[in-house]
Image 1 (cartoon, rainbow, N blue to C red):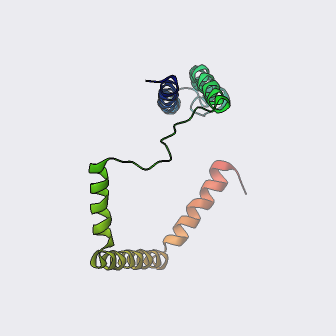
Image 2: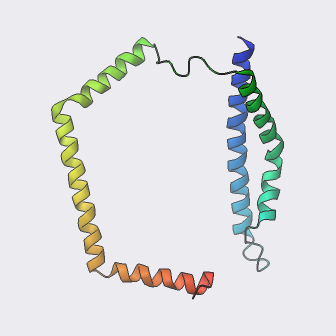
Image 3: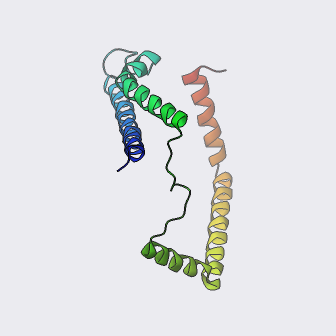
Length: 153
């Protein structure tokens, strides 16, 4: 295994680790806000300080990943096979079968009819919702949220 390949693997692992840690920080921030609603009046409000405190443990790893990315760009380290098609015989055979099935005239016509039917059904349900008074309900709820919660008006 070459140094370039090891560099790319470490960079990919760092990116995956950062994504997982960011997701965990976001969930931790969300659950800490929802859990504090019974306590202080403003403890459940998400602020910049709370978000910064939740994301601070990820910052060193993010900076290392950023430095590795810049180093890879400067040194010209990239995967040479990323732009080339896959040469796996079994995968090509399976993809060929998928493309042959999709290219059949009957399947394409059936898909077109199905899409048209779903579109017609969606339009009919939208019109029925408007005629049923759903439009006024949504407008009234939106106005109530703007005037009561946000303070517009």
